[in-house]
Image (cartoon, rainbow, N blue to C red; front, side, top):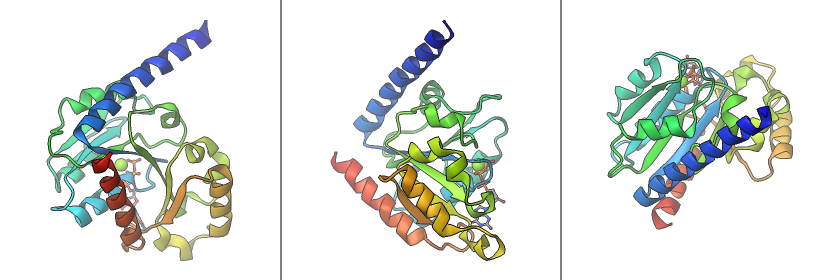
Length: 219
Ligand SMILES: Nc1nc2c(ncn2[C@@H]2O[C@H](COP(=O)(O)OP(=O)(O)OP(=O)(O)O)[C@@H](O)[C@H]2O)c(=O)[nH]1
Ligand SMILES: [Mg+2]
């Protein structure tokens, strides 16, 4: 009986995600769901991306947090089109939360939508939101063993971005070990390194983003 209930929840989420996906396809909006542990740098990454693409890419953000409008206020200092979801304790976003947030977003003319998921490497992994791509942000300060300890997050992603490389010299982070375990878990995922603090790696990231946007517009 317990299994039936879980299956029903996941089936319902899948149906809602498909509705979101169709809307994104019709409007030709590239949607990226960003997952990470708390504090890996999701909000900073979104802000640094917007700063580098303003005037060229029209971006909206759905900001997922347990509570507060702290992150959405930071992003609103740059762009208007930001909607905060407070889950009130739930450790992940689901497709119907996103559907509700979409009612408040201006979708016409939007090129790119970032969904910042709740900081957590476990719960968000199983919930399809209707996104085109998932980014898993990991950071040097979390340590090099995150792929080993939270494999599903790394298996179910399209791109792993290692953030906070400016801290590499102050830590025992073993990059070859990190890279090896990421590749073993998911051969299809890309892997790039960035620092939101110094800007290192952002040229590569923006090139990837521009290619994804071009692909979405021609689909
Ligand atoms: N040194 C360094 N600090 C960074 C970098 N990126 C982000 N930070 C800092 O890391 C802290 C957390 O960053 P956030 O962007 O709030 O992280 P988050 O993943 O959005 O956090 P939650 O929303 O709480 O899960 C902040 O103090 C950032 O200034 C980086 O590349 N290098
Ligand atoms: Mg954040």
